[in-house]
Image 1 (cartoon, rainbow, N blue to C red):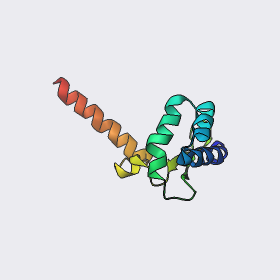
Image 2: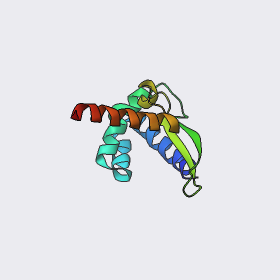
Image 3: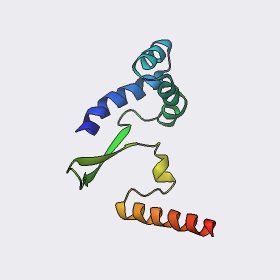
Image 4: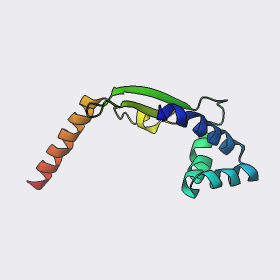
Length: 110
């Protein structure tokens, strides 16, 4: 539910960042932190400049085991560096990656 509520707000902020006029700069700095506004203007807006809307994709991840909360992954379309880098969002792959990192650390200690 929180991901769905965040989507319209975020898409409006990205649209404002694409305009990059004085009014949009002031509005974004008022509603977001300076660092977040700078990130929107410098990295996100140029990456989605040709896109007319629908900047955000919500992928449902299922239910969390501990408390049963619904999990979702929020990605920027045309800007998801995690997918380009080949980072997996699968739980089994995360466990494998943790084991691999641990074995690398153990080998370095020896």
